[in-house]
Amino acid sequence: MDLASPDVRALINRNPLAVIPIGSTEQHGPHLPNGTDTFIAELIGQDIASKLDGLYVPFGPYGVTPIHAEHPGTISLKRSTFEALLTDIVEELTFMGVETFVFVNWHEGNIPSMDAVAYTVQKRLGINIVTAQACYVAQRIYKELGGELTHGGGIETLGVMAYDADLLRVERVTTATRPVGAEELDEMRRSKEVYGFVTNVVELANDGWYGNPHWAKLDDVSTFSEKISSEVITLVQAARRARKIAQSR
Ligand SMILES: [Zn+2]
Image (cartoon, rainbow, N blue to C red):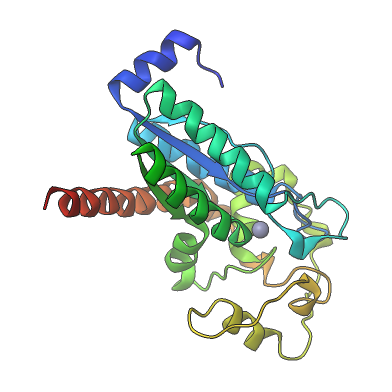
């Protein structure tokens, strides 16, 4: 968005790769902004684009998040709208000469739609798409330090502090309560084998958020984006190599 047209041309000529951050606008409890997922995706996406010397292309603030409907501040796209928007952006950039796309996502509800678009447009346009679930990468990185990827919890609080610490309303942090069976429900919905669907966040958390925001420490803020973007890049390069090797056979 900051670049002028000739600069975009030069960048794509030098490296035909674009990074698209994808998040969501949804309630994150009383202590975090509704833009939490989008802010974090954009922070990490910008880092990845500059490290890869690629074109950074904002997607916009919205994602697919019906699970948070009815909570003020949540604005969800229909899957069809989301998929149409992402498809249009990828098509336009392909016509400009971009050959490889990295989707950097921080919202689980977007995954089915992102994957559907990636499959369809890659096949139709003959481009390469790599999808990075940055939230899961963060979960793995911070697990040994006690960090948890929960809605409005420690890792997301750290991400918001890294984006803009003034957006955290620390005085509003309370102890989140969860309905009986919520932990099992979480494990089930994230399993790859047999799972039922959770359609309202209150099945997981009484107040719409859970976890421990106090886990997030100012000391870790400066390395948040660097840690996650470096790890995502390692995996993106491995995915690109794997496809190239497979295609050359
Ligand atoms: Zn979130």
